[in-house]
Every structure is written in C-alpha cells, then in structure tokens.
Image (cartoon, rainbow, N blue to C red; front, side, top):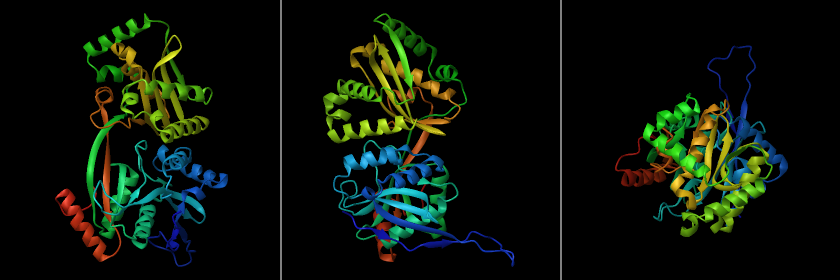
Length: 394
C-alpha cells in the first residue's frame, strides 16, 4: 500500500490593505495525500459529498459514489491516492493521483490525475473561491513529493471554466513551465432553444422527415414507448437490461462491452445505483412491447449533466433507435437546473456530432515540478513532444 505523504500547513492571508486596529484572520490550508481505502468511512464520505454539492465546477466522476467504485474495481494494485485539501478542517479540494512509470508507451515516470476508460472528466472537486489555492497546494505537493516523477500530467481537463483559468493564472504567476500536449473538441448540448426548436435547427428537413418516418414504421412493430426516470425504483433491473443490450451489439462482439470485464460490470452497477439513490441519474429508454431497444444513462450534476452510456438493439438498426432516443434526450433543454450536457463522446462522433451543435474543449496538460534540474529535463521532454518550448497551457 502506498505510503502517506504530507506537506506542512500553508498559511494564507488574503488582504490588500489592513486597518491598524483590524484583527488579522489567518486561513489555514493543509494538503494531504491519503490512500483511498482510508477514505471510505461514512463521516469522510459525508464531507466528500458536501464538497461535491457546492464545487465550483461539477465532476460526477470524482464524486464518492463514482470514484470509490472505480477504485475498488480498477485500482487492484493500491496505487491511487487522494490529494485532500482542508481549510481549518473543512474539505475544500480533492483530486485522485497516481505515479505512472510510463508516458504513452515511453519509459518516462510522471505523476498523473487518475482517470480510466470510463472516466470522462478529470477536473478536481474544489470549493468556490479556493481555485488558485488548490492548484498552488497541489503544485507544492508535487514539488516536495516528486520521487522519480519528471512532471505532472493532467488528463480530461476542460479547456474553459474557473478551474482552467485558475490553473493558467497560477502557472503564469509562478513562471512554471507547462504545455498543452493535446486538445480536442467533443459534442456539448447548451442552448436556450426549446427542444423541438433545437432539433429543427440541428437537422435539415429531409433528415427530420426520415426520422419521423422511421418512428412511424417502428411503432408498427408493436407498442412503442419512451420511458424516463430519475428515481431509484427498478434500477437493478434497468442496469441488467442495459448490460444485456450493449452485449448484443458491436461492443459485445469486440469484447469491449461493460459486461465483458467483471471490473467494469461492478463499476457500472455500483455507480448507477449510487447515482440513482442520490437523484443524480436520468434513465431514458425506448421500449417496444416493454423490451428496451435503446437506452441512455445520464449523470445529473447541476448546472451540468454528463451523457454517460448509451446502447441500442442492432436488430432494429433500420429504424435508427439510437438517434430517435437522442431526439427524446433533447428534453434536457427544458430542465431549468441543467444549463449544459457533456456528451462524453469521442471527437467527431458519427452520430451525436450531427445533433448536438455546441462543443467542449478537452485537453491534456503537462506541468514542470521539482527543482531546477528536473524542470530542465521537463523542458527538453516537452519540446521533443510538442515541437515548442513549454510556454503555458492553452
């Protein structure tokens, strides 16, 4: 099991001018690296959930109900730690990290925020107003606990928002070497239009006419219904139906379905159950005679949402059930608590990119850590990878 690493408490005073008779109030921030297995007690999870509920930017993949099942299923070697930032005993920041011996196939050791194939956002959970302090504490910890790691690598990072701007500002203030090594755009749903108005603006009249025809033909096959739920009732059966539906498709044939691996099966069941219990899951299904032929699971994280997993029955492919279901998913635009929905899809996705017209920039950043020699090595590595001197994140 990984050993704990601690940094000394950091005292921060945020005053530009202080009257002579004023009392100076000091805010104490302390960052610890805790092994995740020691963060499973109910009292700790309650503090974790309280942070997630008020985080400056949402990330359901780092909430307790998703991250802990991910770690139980996937971190069998016990290598992941949680960077845990407290302010006078109150949790104000959290991010999972791990030491990697290789960098995309090259023997280059580095520190990395922990993500996996079914984790589509790497943003830390941070309390409002503590964005700069969080990144400062993380960078200080990396400097003091670099070990053999040559730099910090951050994956699945949105290229806009308060945490991105805070990281960019802190790197510039410290004149710390950093670079964006990859940036891609994926589909995002964010509009003030009503669902049908958005649908008409996204697809041409010919395509909409074809979808209406497919819907009518599909309805001739049996009783066609749209089922939508945000509660926990029936979640076990719904999850089993989704796994079975996905397995019957191309992912099942390729061996990449969730059910193909006991670890991802366990993660899917636990995370959907945890999200449903907290009212953080919307389940959408298109059923024919009561049998699901297209399903979609979306994590709710106001003011956003994350389209997590979808599957459809390929036996009905001629009716485009997946696209018909996405038409129904546009009803999210009518939800006053949801301002945007991240597709969590690959860039240039063949289906969703033609329906959702907005885009979200997702990037990978590499950042210098440690002393002068280590930072010099980072500069050489970054220049070799990107072809330019690291001049900050994009």
